[in-house]
Structure formats: structure tokens, C-alpha cells
Length: 248
Image (cartoon, rainbow, N blue to C red; front, side):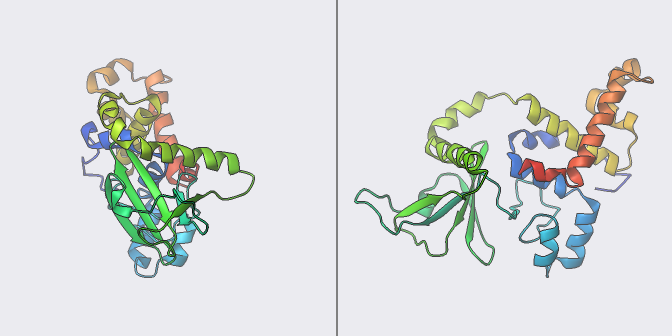
């Protein structure tokens, strides 16, 4: 991320995957660019639990992996993580837990306390924290942490479970979805941040994002384009330095 001679951040197509990331995945994209976090990974990757807590993780994750390959285990869990436990008093119509019937590409991690499942569903990601007491075929229940944020947590989990139920129906719908303003903003913010970390000037960042012709016409003191690039870079630096917690 800090090679001033590199042009890895130039192709905008390399950032298109960002348009389909949710909050926790976006948080990882900003954290993994943090130079201090990358140094922490190099020093403590084998003894990472204490160092990981400083960054809001249970275990350090390899910063060379982008959100398509990395599976950071955040602490505390984001509100959207679905907690799954055995149902100690199941009804006659209780459904059995069947891990491999969950749709999508699945990744499993054991963090020392429970099994963490990440399932990629079309353009979404489902995250589950599975109790070690739950076995395949057992009746199961979802849990929501109590507290002042109960309503927000419930709505977040409800959205995740709806996404799971509608996974097959969404396959056709998401094929034509257009990215919204916020995903586009994150994509440009990350690209501008990478350019800055690589040693590029603000004008060079603008030329990559908006084109040389546009910059030649609109780059001058107090221009809207210049201010826009400054905001993108400042926003990226803020999110990288700890603001990524808000995305969780």
C-alpha cells in the first residue's frame, strides 16, 4: 500500500467488487490499509489475540487479503451477525439445523469459542455465530443480545434472515441492480486512499478518478473538483484510522 512507484490503484475496474460489500466487509477494507495495522500483523501474526483486540478483532487477519478472501472475526460481533443456539424446548414442527443446506459459498472459522460461518449469497454476505453445543440435525433458535440497542439489533438480524429466506428469489433480482450513491462513494474513497498511500499527489489522484481532460479544465484553487478530492482523501484517512468501527 505504500509503494510510491506502484500503479496498482489506477484501474477503477479493480475496485468494482467494493460496490457489493456490506458494512463489516467495508470496515475490513479500510482497516487492512492502515500502515500501523500492517506492521502489527507482521510482528504478532502468531500471537495475535491481545493485539487483535486493539483493532476490534478477535484474531488478526492477513491485510494482504481483500474482503473477497478475508474473514475478519470482529469483536464485539456486528449487529448483523446471527447468533444460533440449540433450542432446549423445541416444538413438534421445529426445523433441524443443517449447515450445508445454507445457500452460497461458505467459509468456516473456529475462533476458540464458537464456529463462525460466512456465506456469500449473490451480492450479499450472511454471517452466523454458531454455538459449539449445536450439532447438525438439532432443533435451533436465533438469539438477540439484550440491551438498549435491542431494537436495532433485532432489525439487523431480521434483515439477514430475510436475505437468507429470499436467497434464491434474489438471484434474478440482483442481476440488474445498479449500485447506489454510498457504494460508489466507498469505491472512490478507497481508490483515492490507495493513491495517497502510494505517494500520489491530490492532482494525480484526481486524474485517475476523473480523467486528465476533466482535471485540466477544472483543477484550480478553490475549485469544486479539488475540494471533492480532498474530502475523499480525508474521509478515507479517517475511516482507516478508526472510523471503520462505525461501519460495523
